[in-house]
Image 1 (cartoon, rainbow, N blue to C red):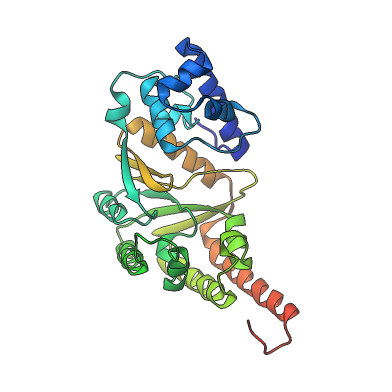
Image 2: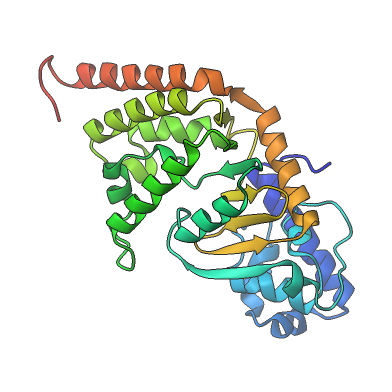
Length: 300
């Protein structure tokens, strides 16, 4: 069974398997780089222990398809041998481009097709069915190709779908990402405190409303790492890598990602029945922090 990887393990596994692919190819680094269409310097950077980034999506696909290895194996999502047949990459994976957000309307179609099955979900930021309009508008403020109204409509439709009694969804998020949101750190630094307070209130109420058909687990981001992805029952999984999805329709890929997701749940430090109370605690902490900064009655 594949164990959950933290970011360091994830990158170390990728470097190790990339080095193995190069060795098995019989090519030197320069020739290998030419074969897969990347610069020699880029390849050296990917193999460096100091590197903290994965290659571009196109480079990953080129390595996997040209050298005939499984993309899930290359990324460390499965421990089985990486060698596959000539056409298996194309047969087992597709690339859906122009995905401007992980709440793309294609997800709605995949959700409908998975009706009656469990959906497993690691969001890029907050779970989309819990977001307020203000947060969606903030996230899309610099996306010129998609209007916030489109994303809001998609989120509303997805929430309405989740309210059906036959739905079954589990979501996993790191507890640190929630703390960063509440305190306005990182990407949330310019989001007004009042908007964050409202979002915490909405999330607290909504997780109570949707339970048990929606169950949200929080894991320790210092012990676990995961890219955003969704598993739509037994037949499809979609890995969101920014502006595109890797879509896996094979049982092998779905099984590997399911094992990874189950590992996140086993490592959860906040269970679904505890999430609402934790969100209220974050809300109270945010208020206490504001009161320490400004005299009572002031706002910002």
